[in-house]
Image (cartoon, rainbow, N blue to C red):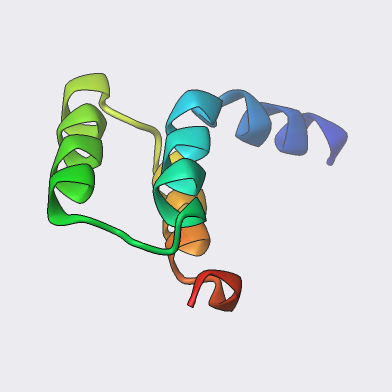
Length: 64
């Protein structure tokens, strides 16, 4: 069970997740920022885990 958690965390792209957080931090999400982030997703072929965690960041109520 520990090894499964290790594999999942290794597949996360923390740079993309940090960028998603920074986009939300100013409480103003601009379309150009989302477009840029989506382009990075496509270019880097992000793991499903990273995409799911990014979506969690964007749906947190603390940024509303």
